[in-house]
Image (tube, rainbow, N blue to C red; front, top):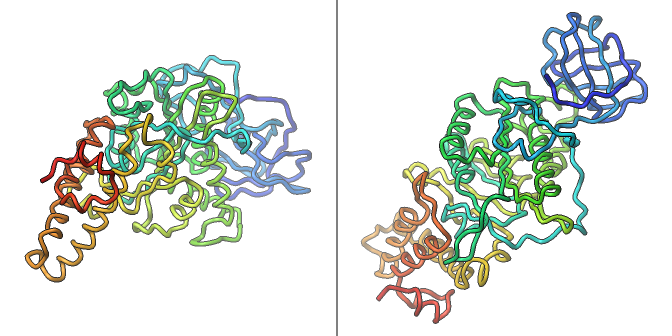
Amino acid sequence: MSNVIVQGGQEVLGVGRIDGPILVVEGAANVSYDEVVEIRDSQNRLRRGRVLEVGEKNAVIQVFAGSTGLSIDGTRVRFLGDTLRIPVAEEMLGRVFDGLGNPIDGGPLPLTDTYADVNGQPINPTARVYPRDYIQTGISAIDGMNTLLRGQKLPIFSGAGMPHDQLAAQIVRQATLGAPAGEKPKETESFAIVFAAMGVKHDVADFFRKSFMESGALTRVAMFLNLADDPPVERLVTPRAALTLAEYLAYERGMHVLVILTDMTNYCEALRQISNIRGEVPSRKGYPGYLYSDLASLYERTGRIRTSEGSITQIPILTMPNDDITHPVPDLTGYITEGQITLGRDLDQKGIYPPIAVLPSLSRLMKDGIGQGRTRSDHPRWGAQLYAAYAHMQDVRALASVIGEEELGDVDRKYLEFGRAFEREFVNQSLTENRTIEQTLEIGWRLLSMLPREELTRVTLDEIKTYYKGE
């Protein structure tokens, strides 16, 4: 049973052309872009689709379930006169849906009278509220060095074989509304997570479901799963269905919603596949020229607005082909979003989890969500000092690889020791370790205490007197 609203409309018998998941229907009048259609084969089996392109004499239709079994003469297409809509309700939390919003957990359809267009509505820039409140993920390399704020879009750039799935699951389990250091975190009743997986393998989907169920996080998570063997056309709808529910929860119910989208590379591959079938002129690496605007239509459905207490925060996860950060998908994503968390292959090979490469990672809004009354007053300068020390350690490490560690001076050796401890104790933490912001700050100060006091040039004298424990 499908949960898409069905309205009346014209019906056409026979199609002009079938090419993969694309149908070309001739003779349809008054058809609208993105209009939903019902498609029935010669045996009256129903499948859904939507209008991709409209011309004077024909309409191009995208079939969600693929065109297998359809014939040119025996296919009936009924135009429904409306866009694709899904039901939205708070009761969808704790449930699992397919990429089109149909339940796949054995439960009933959501009981609601509220249906929302999956394409959403663009947020008026004048209605936006600047993000200033942080979300505590329990992961030091994010909370301390690349702080995530409510209403921010902060992608994770990963690569094949790296533990981005485990990191996403850990963020879902641990993420809470932040609290200043030394204070108890706020209650999480108004905090929800919408998780959308696109083109993932069955074992990966089972990993996420099992992980959320065992931790109890599933009660505040709505999952949208599009598997690798599902039609690629459905993959294009999956993140839009997830964001539609997130918009309802945030702007209608006043909840703080964290949206995790994985893997955006699979989404872009599906977009490229459909574009090639349509015969569009390809752009860089075969992707359509509108890849930027298509990604922006997803990423920009994020933020806070003046008319609602709720917020949408987005963490898209993408795997960079060949670890190439200049590939079109991470390249364009970086232009649209407010920073990135980059996973490092060298850290992963050292057995460090999560292998977050601190130096190429960035949260552009971090400065506005930390400091006095938000995390702790020393956090901004503490973070700058850790960055500077770790960056200098990289230079020392490169020098040591040429002349040998024994030829380094005493201060440079201390930097090498600091760097090893930073990766082993600060970046590295277990899958179940959930650190408060205060614990993260204390670990950082303990590591900075390994350096001579005169090397700490980015923190104040009062902060050194209070937190520095070196000689």
